[in-house]
Length: 258
Image 1 (spheres, one colour):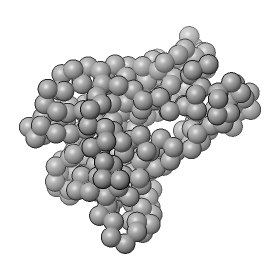
Image 2 (image 1 turned 180 degrees about the vertical axis):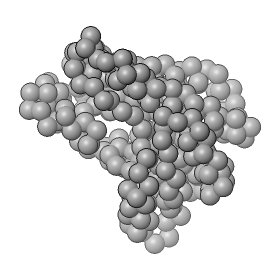
Image 3 (image 1 turned 45 degrees about the vertical axis):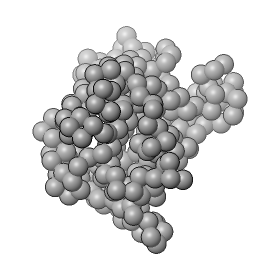
Image 4 (image 1 turned 30 degrees about the horizontal axis):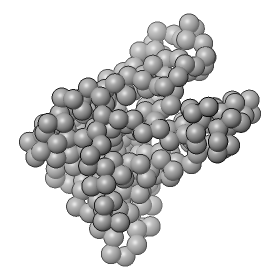
């Protein structure tokens, strides 16, 4: 397990009060990291941090703290970085997991304000936050950034067009940043989950027709659970993933191979 050890690492995770982000935070804490639980609702973040801290086994070096953030505000994102420095010290790993999708339906009917919100939250906020932590990582010649994308960025959709565009852009953001900052030993990768049982994707997996479409042809014949994504994040943040950068790891039960 030494290859996956995160002891002494400080990790900031957006959108970590539930779902995939929460699972990533928990597994990274179990691997020894000090994790920052971050989303808009401070009380929910506090509950998650308490849950993580009380569930860690004796002798585990990991722990969880809370710093609320609004990813749509550049000022709030900068405060997240500044407060993380005050509470933890350097930021070794950044996980951009927070995203939104306020519209479900044909792209031609997507209101302009919904389209703008999707692009701002899912692309621009990641661009901002990455650029806020990159200078210290480059100075140390060490760091890892993980962006949680989606298999929606790999194929077209009749109901999630704008969201899929944003997730494809996240994959390109990872490639661009890797080319720019790889020479300074900063690794930037993405994870593309398939359909996962989260509140965010509830409209999909609670719809019998969509659920059947997503699982009937997939080799594993089921949707995924949040913790099944977390292991990839631990890999990318640890020594085990030290030679991986600029890539998107697809974790979808085989949905995209058929």
